[in-house]
Figure (cartoon, helix red, strand yellow):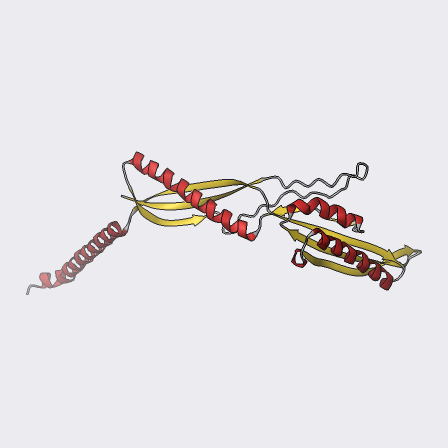
Length: 249
């Protein structure tokens, strides 16, 4: 073999290998594109919404007693006597034990700062119960009866919905939101000249139960007219959204 041909052999080998590498890369790219085309689907995304006006069926309020006395035992005893009377009166109205829960009890000294020294001048005893009830027609009586029995700390009234109603609301809102998304997706698909083939994915905007909290109301009895404390739960709007990805053909 001539010397010139021997010298050119490595050059030809490099060219041949380069061609093989290019062909392999091209084949791999073509296969990947074919697989992508085969596995990929066309989709459209749509948001569905629903809302309702809700009337609460549950109320919460705090009823408390604060008593001051010269010593701790006297303060605690007087406080306990007043709170026991309040609880008895509330049960007489129709409240059950499960609707009345003690939330806070304490006895603490009252200090007087004079000439650089703190001296104890008496004690305060506090006792609070939380009332949670679905007997909304009794709210005015609960407030006024508690005040008449000695309660001197009646907190704001919070209205919400029970767990049973929350579950019912959630199911209704989801159904309506899904129907809304489906209706809009069908209309869009028709305008695009395609058809809905199925659902690829979906999600809800809020994973918690739709709970309604109303504005806090300070209980204050009209002492001049003797009229019962007015308490109106009113209504509030609850809403939910769903996000759905539809497969189209």
